[in-house]
Length: 42
View 1: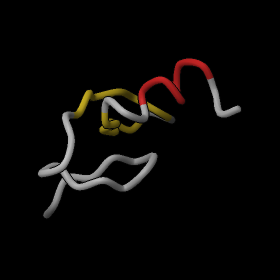
View 2 (view 1 turned 90 degrees about the vertical axis):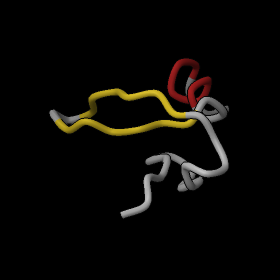
View 3 (view 1 turned 45 degrees about the vertical axis):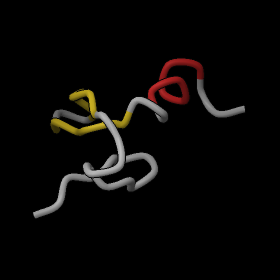
View 4 (view 1 turned 135 degrees about the vertical axis):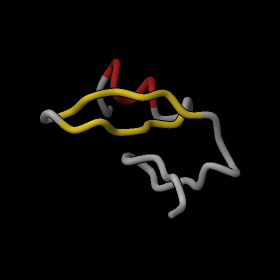
């Protein structure tokens, strides 16, 4: 199973990931999408 960012869908071979919890489930988010989660989409 390939690891992907839950926001943009980028594969783990392309990006670095950080683990987080959303809705009681562990998710992975890439570092490029992290600012979107912190600041919200504009």
